[in-house]
Image (cartoon, rainbow, N blue to C red):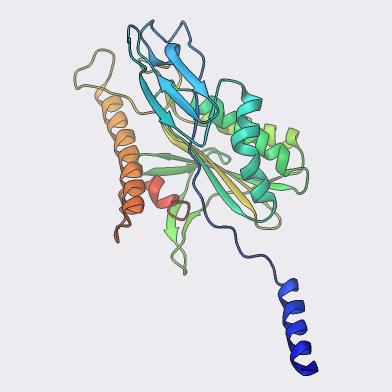
Length: 287
């Protein structure tokens, strides 16, 4: 009996020293509704008539007598940067500080405020991570089939699979930051280098996908993905060149591929079309 008790106690002691099991991967969907802007929005635009609660958004068009259409989410926040970052970004930055991996994808139409939110999230996350460690930052731009390093004057980067099959951005630099001022200095120029163009909805619309990665010494990693905005364009549209139309088609095609990959994962399909677009190929491990 004593021998059995001893073995059981030894087993319990060993179990107590084991590291905790890895957290189950989860996906959180959050909506951020920006304020109505007179320079961009008309009286019938959705943004001017959206109701926001803590876990949902209800959209009502102008003159709609009904309740409109509701979307239930994990989080819904208004235009305040601090509230958005505390609600959505802080838990993921804390996960990365504990050695975990997290990814935030900013998705929406041109003019929705993705880049504004992404830049606020970049700085907030960096400042939070810097409290416990120095941070390595990298900044990748994806435009069509081309990839470049925004921290190295747009030098070319290739996406290649390593021995384990994980896609790696070969040639992408990692810049160590010891303070938030250091981070600001490095990312300010990177954000300026990103491709932009005027659209019907935004005079400085981002016309590429940008992936800002923050990595700490313990291996924790947070990726902030600012997607290019989708837009509806017709051939021969006024003020749009053939090059701009082709650019918009490439953006919409890559966003469509992202949707297809998410749906395939939700359905449990054996084949997920990650390789149809550079952005989904890069985000394969996150998806």
